[in-house]
Image (tube, rainbow, N blue to C red; front, side, top):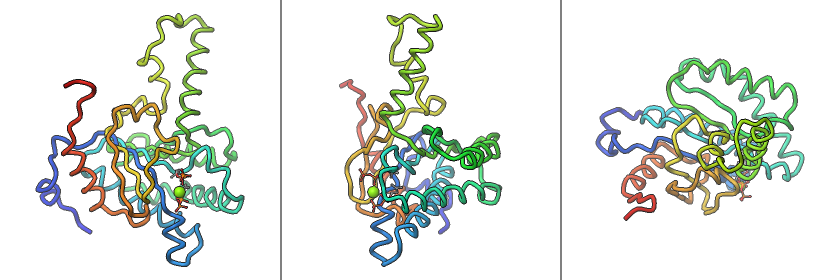
Length: 246
Ligand code: IPE
Ligand code: IPE
Ligand code: MG
């Protein structure tokens, strides 16, 4: 579907586009089950949706899109599903040169990479390196990501700094800790979207969600379209963000 600049500008206030959007890509399994397809078909369709939505957000001028693709808790799924997800992910990363050749998207992977295989780690590093000079939207793919793990990791790094005499405990503030979050280089999260009818964070962007707006929808992620993103942004633009002020 073509979304021309004019179409977009008629509906959205281009001066109030969220700078950073988080999406919890949920509902892949239910999408597949409703079609009598294996769950992995849902994950594949979900990966295609992410491409489409990243491109659209880039067009709108969104600076960063953080997509929850695999949580620290998702390892607790049946082995077959975890293996399928790893395979899908690996193949996706291997195709980075075809998929991202003509896209002004910088791909970053956030989360703890320690448990991934060496070949997966190489594919991650290659994908990031291949897109590192793109100056359009930053697409953060959250893999083995958990908000609590991210905060614990930041605390560990701050503790190292104390040990090395870089900072005194009494000088540690939100700003200092915040610099160790995975999203330190991109703007604050303005909007968090969760499709599939669930209304919870499931350990996504706990630190960053402090003043984010939330938007939920019944639609399963593989069916999520540019229109749905447009609806979410239209609603976002009606919100009165007070940040604790009057
Ligand atoms: C989200 O879809 C993808 C991952 C968590 C990897 P789900 O697999 O959670 O889909 P549902 O919630 O079972 O429908
Ligand atoms: C959140 O979805 C994680 C991702 C979308 C990657 P889940 O399906 O894992 O969340 P819960 O279990 O419903 O909370
Ligand atoms: Mg789910």
